[in-house]
Image 1 (cartoon, rainbow, N blue to C red):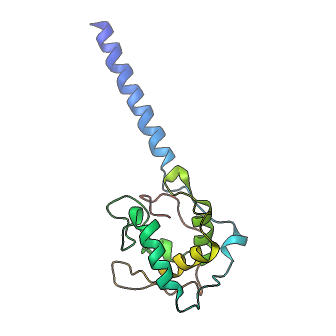
Image 2 (tube, rainbow, N blue to C red):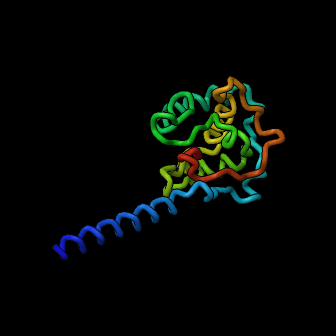
Length: 156
């Protein structure tokens, strides 16, 4: 009887410890921020009229599997690219995140893609609309670089 009580107590203790560790590792207070220098980098494709269409094609091939075709990530737990938190980031910050990835939170690096292609994807992401139907304003006047790393995996 004493052994059974000790076993149950140990099981409960270990469960609580595991839950505490898991919650700490996925804390929404963690930030996945691009360095200021990278975040300040302008999008050379922003004014290219063909960039969004080229970016959409690449997005559908390489990004939609996780972020969904509409960028919501709603069925996969990936970042909602339409969210104000993502759209508020500068183009340079998004470029840095696409380039370097965040494998701890499921975002691979896409450094192997040509730079122009990565900028095209960002140009396309700026066309996505949030749930209110509002589109992005582009990178002009966007906050430089920050965004949380894993608000329900709401980062790219």
